[in-house]
Length: 202
Image (cartoon, rainbow, N blue to C red; front, top):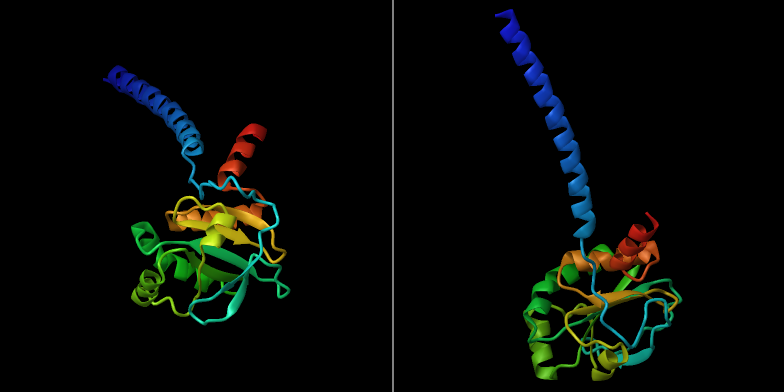
């Protein structure tokens, strides 16, 4: 009986040790997998402009207020500018509007939101009414999209107070919007670039 008990204890300890090493191996694999599928940031598509360059400055009309605003210009009050390019016939753009409005409210201490489209004025006005966007700066300009190299929507560009492009890219989720601010804080072109640099140096 004592021999049987001793044998079972030995087998149990062997099983515990094997399980311990299996957990260690799985933990390592999870870490590797996380690095491979790390959260994706906003995807940069513009070939016309690069992060770190001076933003093109344009004076355009805010169709909500009727006043002229400077887009991409140096801001003496130290505020940054987030350009969000959208279209009335873009379902993803419409789905993102609550997130965009939330971001504008959360970051209002240092950030000005500018909504931008080049769509027909009637459809744009309907979009503004439908989603209650009258309180936001909204420009309707084909020139703005072409100047910033916007090819796909929804697209966002973050410009700092010195008129420098800090981050930009295709945005399809809150995660993508937050990646623009993270890239700015890390002083890198994009979250993807930061992760690639980390892999090379790590």
